[in-house]
Image (cartoon, rainbow, N blue to C red):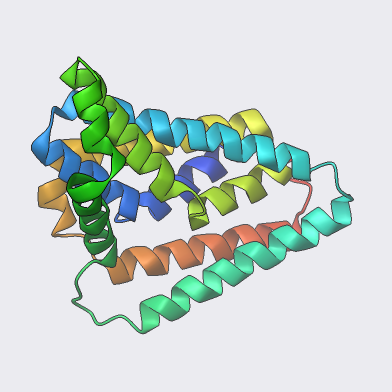
Length: 215
């Protein structure tokens, strides 16, 4: 349980800082109530975490050897890819997550479904919650953290992974809505990407040398 919680917490906290969903929370919190944005974003991330863990549990019914080697390949592949991406980034570069998040928010405001939802719903607070939830959920779908959560849940204790991942999302979301604008300008995308790559490699190494320790 503790190992699964720690794995989920570390994976999410390091991977989500500076990610697209992080900056979606930053931008929305600059325009709307921080409390409402926090609740909407965290609800979406928690829902995605639960869904990912359920998918991981479905995958866990397959032969253990397939799951084991697939998990190793996934973590090592992600780790090497992130380290490669970090090596190609200049020391000071614009954060692509921030640019992607700005594009998502701009598209929703120009012609997406959120403005219509805001008109239909009588309560502006509900409209803000819905906007934060939908934008975050869609942005997180298919993200590397979702895929990694599925892999963790296939071999780690599911309740621990779920709790650790949600706590990690809560930490990142709180940072985003409270001081995201200030912190975002100080985040080195190169450093965060490299740390994420190292973390994935560590998970892969643990799976290689001690595949049953987290079960």
